[in-house]
Structures are given as C-alpha cells and as structure tokens.
Image 1 (cartoon, rainbow, N blue to C red):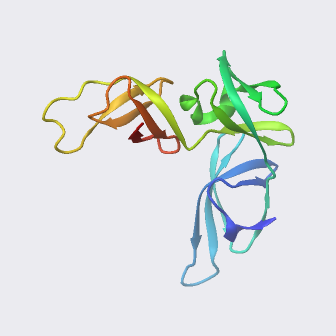
Image 2 (cartoon, rainbow, N blue to C red; image 1 turned 120 degrees about the vertical axis):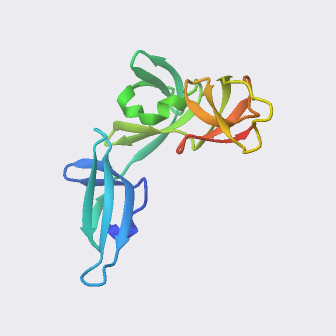
Length: 185
C-alpha cells in the first residue's frame, strides 16, 4: 500500500479488481477544505482512461509487476514473438498488449515485458531508438531559415517530423515517448 501523495506517472495500481496505470496526477490544496489528488488512470488491459479523485493521504494498493528482458524476434500475423533471454523460450504477445510502441519495434530489439501474476500485460520499449529514414522529401534550397521540419517515414513505418537536413538513408535517434526527433546518428 502506498499513499496517493507518492503517485508518479507510469506507476501501476490495483483498483476495483483491475490494473490501472497513472497517466497524470495533480495535488490540489484548495483555500477551504481538505487537500485532494486528482488523477487520470488508464486501464492496463482495456486501455480505458478514467479520472478519479482521492483524498490526500489515502492509501492505494501498488501492483507488483515482474519485468523480464526479452528480445523481439518477428511479427506473426497479429502477434509479436519474443524470446526470453534467460530460458530462450519463445512467447507470443497479442498486438493489443504491445500498445503504441509497436511502431518502433525492430527485429532483435531488447524490450521489457511486464507481467502480473504470470500474465503478460504489456511491454516497455526503450526511451530512445535508432532507426533508418526510408522516405522523406528532399530539402528545398533557401527553406531552412526558420528551422522548419518535414515528415520522414522510418524503417518500422513510424512517421516523425525531422529537420530539413535529414535525408533518405540517415540513421536518426527518436524519443519513443513523445514521437520526436532527437538527433542524427
């Protein structure tokens, strides 16, 4: 059990017979009355987002998650095949458990598989990935004064905004949490 005063983004809680991940939280201390914590919670299994308010100091159950490092091998239909690095066992994870990170998955990439009670609930991909640009329009001469951006399609199919100097074949680093270009490798 933890206090709602100690909530952080990404923390997983056990509430109402389900697993909920904290998306946002805000401590509110009104001029009159008791303080409270306003949260936005996302259901880990269904993806539903709800808003819930807790009294300050209220206790909630923290979910015990097991993180196992696995290697992404390939996609098989609507399932992603991962290999456990310790036992070399291959498991298939349904597409809906992979989440938004699927657009950055590259074969042989290491990921963290989240498990709760020996049940797979999702994966965490690295915060930054290096991917090759496969399609982006050429830079136009004289169009760089304002430091603008252009769309670029990466080798995994993800589309990010990149500076004009990035061209096809370049390897770039992308922040997977915000879908932003970081730098050219």
